[in-house]
Length: 369
Image (tube, rainbow, N blue to C red; front, side, top):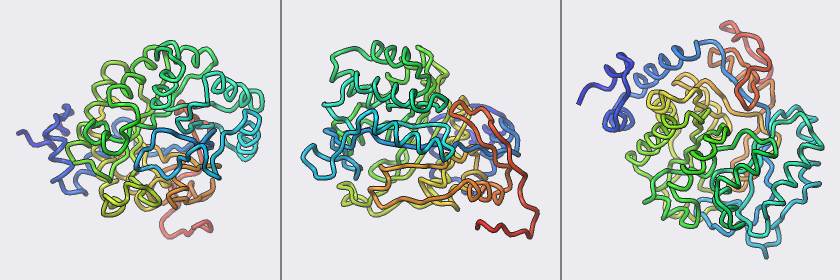
């Protein structure tokens, strides 16, 4: 098998075996260096972007029962809820007043929430905050809603398109291995269904992100296959904007009993670097301070990522696992600068809205860290 680093140097596409070799055997420092070179060739070595967003959930009632989830509730649970459009809009208005430019809207698979409710949520947000970008409903939610409404995916997606929505968050991908999905999320959209939502959405004109949740029952081969599946679909449609991995958080989940513990941050950085190399048709790779920790997020920026995720006004899903870090604008800027980059605020289409100052000179200490 050809040396994968030679393949990268020659700007050729890695095959599955080469990708697996990099994931499992390559020295991490060398892998990060190679990924950083790919990143610099595409984006330069100056800017790291971030978005100011809020992630409210319109309901926590869910019938899917994923074993990795600590967020979902039964309808009878004391803390179960389904927001009205007016309640949702009030929360989004507060986030907008705090500086949020995007609302990433998702919820549980609640059979009592119908398509008319989805539309009501969108319209209520638009009426309250005409200038905020509405980024709603994961591919898994579209599969559930299409089944619940008895309509096909294309009709459902076109209905949401007609409401002025142009982007879709790529949640619910978990690991694109049917063997693993049957164990961790047997009631959720299948691999083929998740990919089909993205395929149809891209053909309509939506732009979507793509996620990966690792650190549970998957193998290294599953991680590589996940990346290859995304690359194949991107070759076909060109509709993905970014790739966003995050590690499984075991707190308060049924799956925790089958997992030794949280994934090591080094694996996160390794996946970031591998993704930047393998996903040669993806424009952006995100490294996150929120899903992992600040140090891992910074290392991801040095290992191929060009985006640092979002400053979250509201987030509820990972909070239920006990994972709820918080930073503000000044701290995010400092974190990015200390990794050697210039922070830049973007919108959901990755358009730069504001560029802040360059990295601090060596020896300077920020008051925010």
